Image (cartoon, rainbow, N blue to C red; front, side, top):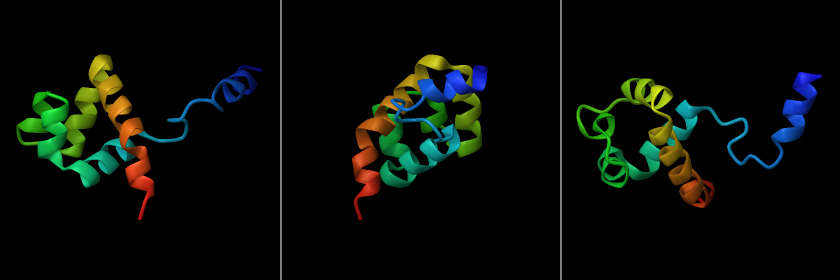
Length: 82
């Protein structure tokens, strides 16, 4: 029953099915670490950045994760265009 309710709640979630790692990797590929760090001012993007360290930080820091998700949604059309 819980799984059915969760599935019903997700159709309007544009991030449903996208892992944080995929989201971050696409942002880094599209923007680069420097621009990402300029847009979202956190040390994990500006000082010796890596996907692994950034994921660790974002999983522990809800406000930063929210900002990354918002940026991803704002850039999503750019990812989909050739």
